[in-house]
Image (cartoon, rainbow, N blue to C red; front, side, top):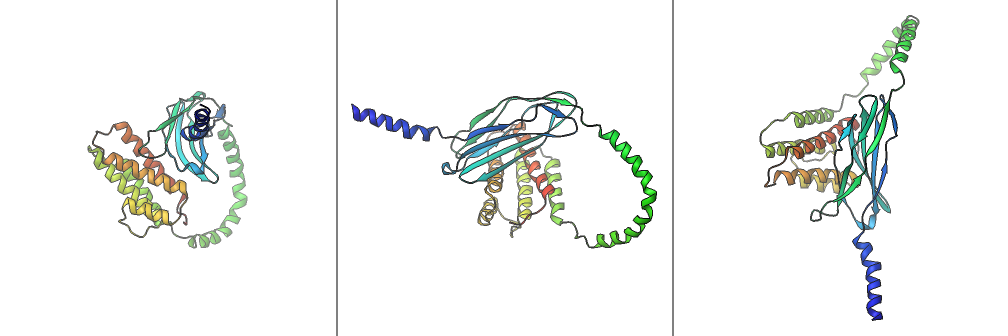
Length: 286
């Protein structure tokens, strides 16, 4: 009887922690009072020991009141613990009450595991008027106009140097034009066939990734792209984001069920957000 009791205590102390291992959730809420002229952020952090291995994180776009979602980004830091951060950036529309309605961020260990939701409670804010920048701008404009006459001669002398310096500015990176065209293509491509849209979007996404990371083969498959990036040792968060995008597109392309228009719209928004990020930050060396 004692042996059975000891065995039960052992299972409770060892097996249960394994069964209930899960990321811990931390929420960095927006300020309770925000101004009309400045954006605000909501940060959600999921943290777990590195020994638990990777988790796949899925974040949805929340429903908003008196706010516009301007950006949704994900990043990941790896050390003794893994910290995955989802950042939402909102811009107020007008003075008054503003709200982020409750929503969920989900995680899972692998494709065969079910998604586990984490509840994000409602976030309430009060939008107030910002600093009167327009009035300040008018005053500064008048002062600036009065000083122009005194600076005219100096500007003529300085103009020659500026024109010379402008000639030495390197030409714009042609890849930025590729990113812009891919963004426009994803935003405007029209087809009644959802699978055709997904295939087209996937090709545009792959062309951006190939250009951004200087992947040698311009006709690389998704699997070859991921393999190359892994061999180059890019940050784990970037690799996981690209892998998640490819996986999401592939699952939807080969699904035997009709794809809801909401899911299609969310996928388009996610792809546009990724491509816009490349236009903003430009190219980096691996």
